[in-house]
Length: 341
Image 1: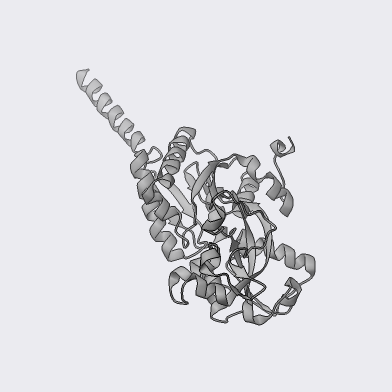
Image 2 (image 1 turned 45 degrees about the vertical axis):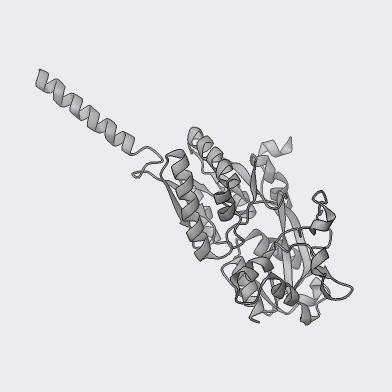
C-alpha cells in the first residue's frame, strides 16, 4: 500500500511539475511579443530583443520577441493566438485586429512621441521637383512601405482616392526609412510615411505646443527664403527625414531636409499601442504593463524605445479600446457598443 501511495505521489508531483512548466511565461510556453517591421527591420530585431530581455528580467517572465515579415503577418498572429501573444500594432493594425477578434483584444498602452499622443501621414517630395499641391502627384511613381501601414499607405490612399489621383507606378519599400532612402535615390517621385510635429527652438521656451494643421515644417524650413532657418532659431526635425539622416549615408538630418520637403499631411490619428491577444491572463498583463512603463522611463529604455529607426516612443499613456473609436469610424470599420456612449 505504501508503495502504491509513493508511486501515486511521485506521479502527481511529476504531473504538477509538467503543468508548471507549461504555464505562460516559461520556456515551455513563452509569451510571444510581435513587432511590425515599420522602419529599419534589422534595427527593430536588435532593439526588440533587448527590450524583451529587459522586460523578461523585470517580470521573471520568458518573452520571445518576433519581428513579423509584414503587417498582415502581425494581424494573423493575434488572430491565431491562444492567449499568449502581445504586440506593438500600428493604429490600423490594431483597429483591424480589434474587429477580427470580436473586440476581445486589449490595448493597454499608447505611444507618446515628443509629448503628442497622435501622429499623421506626411507626403514627402524632392524640393527641386516643384510640386505645390497633392494634385501635382497624379501620374507619378509612389513609394510606400506596406499596404498595412496606417501612415505609409492607408491614410494617403484615402486622400488620393478622394481626389481621384492615380499613379504610373508604385515602389513598395518594406519600411518607412527604406521609403525615404528610395526617394533620395530617385526610385520614385514621392514617398509617404509617418509624420511627427516639429519641436520648437529653445528660444521659444518649453510651453509652446504645435497643433495639427500648422505648418509641418514650422521652425525648420523658411518658406519665404526657401532655405533652412538659421541654427539659432531653428527647431528640431523628428520625422522620417531624421530617421534617414541617422543612417549617415545621405548626410545628416539637415542635409536630408534640404533635399526633401513635406508637401501635405493626412490625419491626425491616435498613436500605436501595446496590445494583448484575447485570453491573455490579466495578472501577467498588469505585470508587463508596469514593467514597460518603468523601462521606458529609464535612461536605458529611453535609448531603445526612442531610437528613430525603432518606434521613437518617449513615453506611454494608459488607454483602453475607446482610444480607437474615432479612427475606426474614420476608415469605415465597425465599432463596438462602448464607442456609442
